[in-house]
Length: 346
Picture 1 (cartoon, one colour):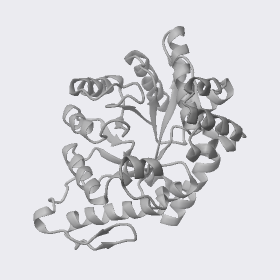
Picture 2 (cartoon, rainbow, N blue to C red):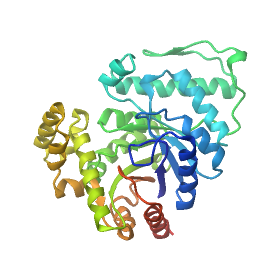
Picture 3 (cartoon, helix red, strand yellow):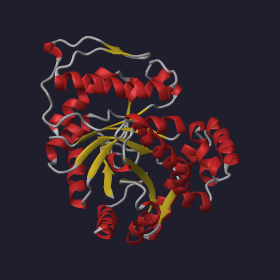
């Protein structure tokens, strides 16, 4: 199991967009012993921090988790992904997600329709574009949502010595999970996923999609950003638990993620969380996340016990585990967790 961290954003307590801060985050990731680092597209661009990370690190794998696909088009994404894969000497992973309809239409002013079918076509278009650059093939991609039929020598980059970057897709629902297993190189599991949902819902869909694409499981990577509530001191642990409860409540209020709660028989919790979110009553929402729900979605333990619990729940199930801490977690605690996971693997 590879163990990753995050840089360049505030969603998991890793800080903002100052270049010096990002450089420190990259250096810290190497000191901690992470195998890779990811950026996410919330309030900042997901690609720019990875250029600095590529220059500052020679060993870390670098990925977006995620960049919003439907806020862009396949050509623009193919270009920036190809560049980052070159600049990083083949260490870039393109992680894409669909976002949800209101954000695509009202925030990005872009079209929305049948996200699973559109994402499938998006990935196929990326591969057609990269193939035209890599092999000199005539670009002639004609789909329902995207058409790319022009590529002249002036606008075609040289073949990438590292090949094309791997593509991983974020998914929660069955159709998008199936698309990931059929056309992508990996799946980015949503942080609002329990071990039970992963085993009973996600993995059977992945297995079916891989059979359809004729690929074995070892040619497909599954990454999971697992929520953790941990701290070196008791007071810090209480603050971490409160922050994780709030994050679970936020996700639980989103209709797109209700299926995870339904599996556990917690559908009524989603209804109430959604009602409170419309009112903006975030404090009341946090109070609805009891210990049973908390422990289903997050590993709650002291740093020295976290690694063993992650391995117990997800060992042999996921290939990459990202420490998801929506609060500041000190470097010593991060290092302790990463070392524990790597040691158990050995």
